Amino acid sequence: VLSGMSINSALASIIKETKSQGMRAILERVLAEVESGSPSWKAFDKTRLFKGYTISLIRLGEESGNFAENLKVVALEEEKDREFKSKVRSALMYPIFVLGLTAIVGIGISWFILPKLAKIFTDLKLALPFITKVLLGFGVFLSKYGLIVVPIGALVLGIIFYFVFINAKTKFIGESVIFSIPGIKTLMMEVEVARFGYLLGTLLEAGLPVTKAIDSLANASEVLRYKAFYIHLRDSVDMGNSFQKSFGLYKKIDKLIPQPIQQLVISGEQSGNLNKTLIKVGQVLEAKSDTTTKNLTIIMEPILLVIVWLGVVTVAFAVILPIYSLVGGLNNA
Image: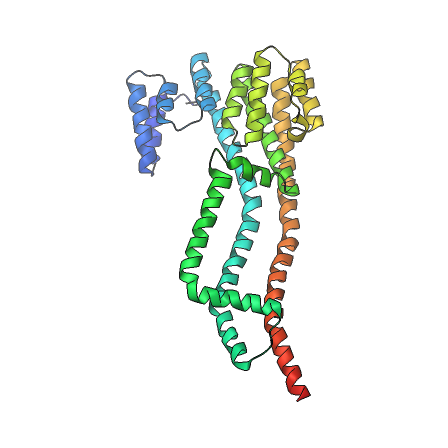
């Protein structure tokens, strides 16, 4: 569109290159709507493909003659949104993968190896330490009921995960857990404040009214505590309050947005450069979140190694102690 191609021709060109049948069907529907005379923002809105603030940007660009420029803003915001989400995922996926793999290996050892050791120790009539009895008992239990217990356990864990981290009504529990972990809490705050700066700044720069921009920010956020703050900020600004007063009226503001960032936003509002200041805040916090993500990975590696080491040592002691007592008994004999 920026090069002078009409929206109809651009859509037709994209359709030819689209391999996904679902996406092709959506774009064909949009093209049909546009060719019938419908504004492009209405056509995109009917697909439910984009969030509300994206549709607002497209509509504003179409009505103001800055359609191509606003589409560039949309593309930038989608890119930033993916980057921010990937940082959080990468920080969480590494420990989840390592601990999950450790649990699978541990269950496999308990299920297939420990029952055989239990039979050997029983035949030798050894006096077993408590830790050995617990582990061998768990292994024998799995050997008898593993085909029932393991699937049920996985199902229960899946249900708990859904209600703690995914379900809209109860995900505040998982959010509280995540925000209680020191390193993850810092990363989440930096990512969300960077999103706050980038999204609000670009929406204001594109010409969206401030209350509409904040409302779009609230709809785009998936973190409940920040969503609640954005709703407060929207309502407060809509009542005629400044950002400074709106920040002051929110009791938990310092836990969500650091004081220096608040001062930057307030200074930007007072100087009339709010949109540029917010974009700068987004850039600064994005760089900090990059560093935090790298540091988290470095810090987590030794912690996870210690956790895996403790599991290995526990199993080793449980197996070695009875053998050691047997060898000691033979020496005494």
